[in-house]
Length: 322
Image (cartoon, rainbow, N blue to C red; front, side, top):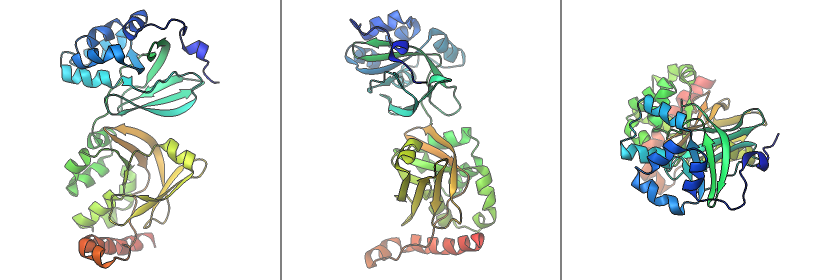
């Protein structure tokens, strides 16, 4: 069933200011915390958009779990993750969407007849349920039963998700620092079982070849599963690997991704995992590059080393998939 505005929203007549609305919503702890963060407090009078307001109990629980609310930098980071410049009413919302926050990362919103509206944040943290919605003069306040936790960098997220083979490969390739600082990209993260399936080939790779395999799993921009489902197909999607692209499709049931060196497409098994400025899709197969494209004279001078590495890797891949 679709969510009715009348069930979600308070009366729109004479909409109050944000602090008055938070007071009416009994968000007493949140108000007190906002007053200790100068950056957030100064933004409140003119803020338009959406506020996700954790209940007093939710905030008390994260403090009890070890969050130091007196660390103003950390507090501001969390508070701004609860603010979005998008006015999201939640009325008639049914499906999946992503809201950019003032903090810089996204919150994933999911709506269903069985669960209402749920919000997902950092990997491994509980989803927050919207328990009540109020309209204020600049947008909407959604009262939620959990605190939203900003995502951590993608290497730490992979560790938390127990993607140990991927993390080990990143470290072996000398890319840990580079990957942890990535921003505005989508990473396709193979499972441990996927790496096990190419173990015989992987142990023969040079560091440069391993880098090219890993870089094939990095795509520019945040490509949500909803984008792929809507588009049905993204042919020749650019990657960070030298001269390599991927084909991304939705077959009506699954999102599938294939590299030129793969005999069968990889399937996305967990979609839209949020990391810091990075979107992650977990896949069941390691993507493998094909032969390096024919080089022009200029490209040959610049990329001959990488091209040679891919050429050797392609031969190994061919042996694997025959």
